[in-house]
Amino acid sequence: MSTVLERGTGTAVAWAEPDATLWVASVDGEYAGMVEFRDGRFVAASSTGKDLGVFVSLLRAKEAVENGPAKTPQFPYVAAVAASAIVSATAVAFTAFAVL
Image (cartoon, rainbow, N blue to C red; front, side, top):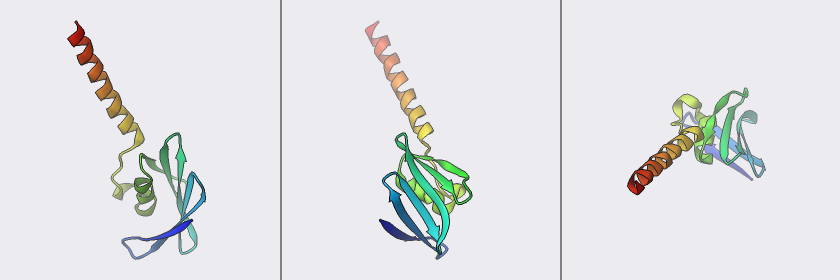
């Protein structure tokens, strides 16, 4: 499956899905980066192999490849897990306090 998205600069970014867990971007036929689904998260890399971040959605990961890391609001997987752990720890603490 292949889709073409327009960048803000007018350059078309074409996305190919050669595998169920891999999306490859190209601009004018040249490799522009990729997104890979690993361990329940989307890992984005630039055309030079630079790590662009880990994302909870394919859309955000693709945006990082298309726009670069500075222009993409990143909500990395690690931050989502950390926030979830804080909420869980707080709930456990309140539950323990209520039992006492």
